[in-house]
Length: 411
Image (cartoon, rainbow, N blue to C red):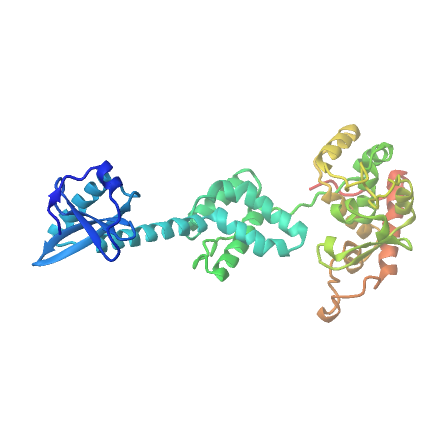
């Protein structure tokens, strides 16, 4: 090895490759132990060289010009100090790389383990396979209540107290039923997360449902008489839609998203995809319902029965209802209460409970379990008779006679 000399950036850059089969090594005088090696191919590399326990140890620092002279001297000082302490710089580097890799893995684990990340997987792998309405309900709770509270939390760090923090806030708004629906969404998510290995403990375990006051709201005869003419006078789709809800007792979406192709031979067939029980449901149309449907305008190229632009079914129920309710001077009821009013009206007309259940699309409470699933047209005439009886009573309510029994007051 040659004598030490003061290396310079200019001198290092100007070094030529030695003859083939030869190798050149230069020792730095500024940092004893720093060596520059030049191969016959012109490759220049830096090393730190020191004797350890009588043996010459060499640690490669990098190549020139990627590492310049100043950086090579700094790296050599560090490496030589470690070598003097008996530490192998290569082992130190390996340990450092291992620590950095572990830190990156932990950072990635924490990133992919957040509630926001896991719930995105939940949506893709589970919710996307459900009916659109079911997914929409779950995502409403997730977006409105869960993500604002837990988005950046590690999903396996969510505890029972965190669940209570969310559902208590909902209950404090005076909505115990909504609190229970949100809890059900959380419970379903964590059941899936346990199955997928994201968590091992369900934080919703042993959380009880809040007590719900079951709604008993039924429109009185006076309220029906106030609402019906306002609905009849409405030039939009809303009055017709609300009258059909009261006449037939079906759910809002079952009529609001109805298409003309679903009506055949005076029967509306609600497809399983839009029915709560996930099966086709036949609704016979009495004369009053047929007259309302016949009066609906037809939009060119549109199959929707209730639409404003012909492209999509109606939306904005709350605003429309509030506007018509104000005209009628009636308040304190929900659209779902029209379904209850229809059921109560059929009962007033003497229709048995099992027959009312058929109209509403419930399972027949008196039928054996083996016959719970029946053909879409099964017992259609029983449904028609029940709805005719209610339509007749509704006509007498709208044009009262002295012998008409009044509906009970709400509550």
